[in-house]
Image (cartoon, rainbow, N blue to C red; front, side, top):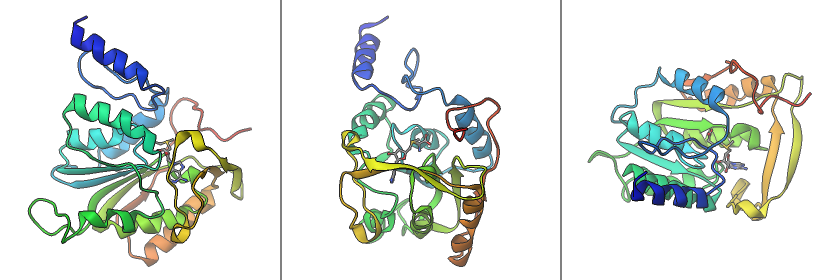
Amino acid sequence: MNAELEHLKIEMERLSPWYHKIDLGPGLVTPGQAFDPIWEMIRKTRTAIDYDRKAVLDIASWDGMWAFEAEQLGAELVIASETAYKKIYNFLFCQRVLQSRVIPFYNISAYNLSERLDVCYSPFGGHGGGQFDGFDVVHHLGLMYHLSDPILSLLETRSVMKENGLLLLETAYGRGESSSMLFNGIDREHGRILSGRNNQAPRGKTRSMVLQCANLVGEAQAPVQQTQLRGLRLLDERPKTPSTREPPA
Ligand SMILES: C[S@@+](CC[C@H](N)C(=O)[O-])C[C@H]1O[C@@H](n2cnc3c(N)ncnc32)[C@H](O)[C@@H]1O
């Protein structure tokens, strides 16, 4: 193994734990979780989306796998947003190795995208030399089941999307009649910035896991339709092998 690769591997191990498996080139893949069946399902569904020269937002980017892949698929502008700001070090490591132009915003909650991403819009920002009028593609992956207010998150998502944009959404859901809160508590060690409605949620009260039922996931379309979001596709395809995202028995 050459010295540079050895050095990168040591650096990568120091950044553990990793969530994503990001291919960083010959002999170097970040040691992520065994969620390959879910990720393959997302990749298969994603083939319907044309990323060429598009503006893409990857919400809850974590180590950044979906953002880097969007860039590799031809996206011109990719923004990775995240609440767990300490994960920026993992993201920046990959960004450097991949020589990526993905832009990280690792201090943005899923509940205040419109307020924080205003920097993308005129007069501050722009895209392709023209007026920026929203993202063509937004990823909302592995996030909804963490949110106590998924509808607010979808409305915020819609607010930063272009008309006729595409939302790629993946979530776990329960098969029961109603949704249930699995846990919701203090989880400071991940170091998150989280803002609730009107930014009044206390910092540190950060972690929630909600088992949303299929009805709620379906009903999420209603407010989205009222606000004329186009292009929403709710996915209901199960991975072929069991995963840890199965609802508890
Ligand atoms: C299971 S990971 C999914 C990572 C990536 N989007 C994917 O699908 O591979 C969950 C993500 O949701 C984020 N998250 C968890 N709770 C959140 C909350 N209350 N508000 C916003 N993001 C949250 C985490 O920081 C993390 O990025």
